[in-house]
Image: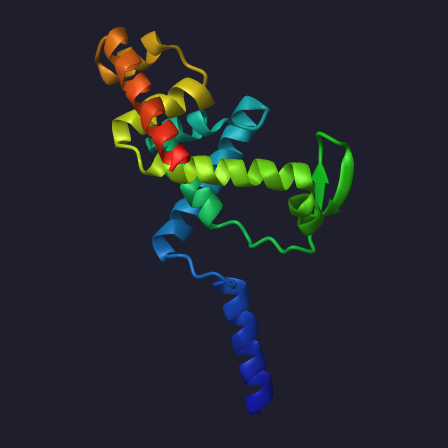
Length: 167
């Protein structure tokens, strides 16, 4: 009697909680986001953007992305992974082990770590400027400062990053 009960409890735990524990509030938000996403898909006739979901739920885009990522099932190194750039398939391990990809991955990780050491305002300016390709004028409007001040913040942030990588 005990063995089937224990196996059933283990299966229930893996089904409901998964291998990685996620807070109930995050799971509830994920469910709400998924429902909203499906409703918007029916209304619009296409997949909604994160911005559209954020507007419908009156949430921040970052929070939506963070909730969706937290509720993703874990990926395994043996999982099949398709590389659309090279039109080839392989395992995630093969993809990560490729020399060109590993160098790029290391560069991205070190850049991400260096950005985390910057003050929030400088990090925001660099992220908007170089990753979202926005102009200094647009960033200035978002921050409520002048374009010249954005230029100075950008210059100081780049100087700090250079110092970080020279050490």
